[in-house]
Length: 376
Ligand code: FE2
Image (cartoon, rainbow, N blue to C red; front, top):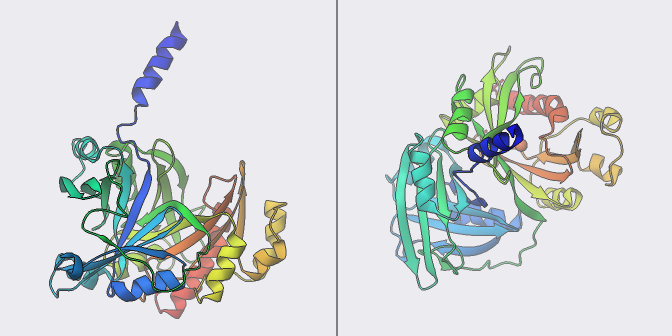
């Protein structure tokens, strides 16, 4: 009898009030979307699929939509001097404005989150063209970043109404990127728990992992991090905040240059990190460097892996293991002049964690970069 009660209780409390199908797209506001689009096509192997701008009747901006695997990036620039996009770019530099989530019902998503305390950014709006309709709503999250809820079950077009299909003018060579693994937010000192609570209470996410300053500290700097995940685990948002250290942490550097909280990195998944990173390096993408001494100890720490260990070392890829398996990962340097957004390339071989065993080596690497920038 008690079992039945327990089951009933569990079922009631575990109703996911915000079911998400995954990441729909990530929109960057950038200084020159045309040139950024070229970079993502030529270096990262994304295919150009759609465009919006003056030619499609949009008067204030130009947006390029790029795709690789399930990853969709939208690169948007203002074409006016004083628009909201121009102001955002002047303040933050190139950065992530929208983390869009794919839902079955954008109206319900808006209602479910705003009724739980989310600040609305855009009430549900229906966009239509000859291919059907897309419903979009949006709420605010940390800094000036927003979450859009995108409902596209009644849409058959390339991206969404307002965009025209546009193809790459060059031959695209994909590098094997499959999907977004996680998107990390940096928030101000003392605000991490508020934002974790936001994702728990307002969006129904669950706390997955906690890292404190003992896990993530070097001789000089420290940070704290908590990872929240939605019900089906398709969407994971680690949230970082700076912690007290002898010198300025990478999170403080980010916040100083981004002028507030924002998206720090996007982790993109591959099934073959050796090929992906080999290609990206050949095309000039800059990665963080870990010294050769890292590989003196790493194989003792992680044990056997199926990949070519020599190639892993040659490409400077990092390795970590948890109870469920191992993972291979590597981080780029910031992808714009401000020390803000960067990418992580990740290959998961069973592991569901985030590479805690690499934190120390990584943060020392980031500190070397910070020092070169005069920001440590
Ligand atoms: Fe990450």
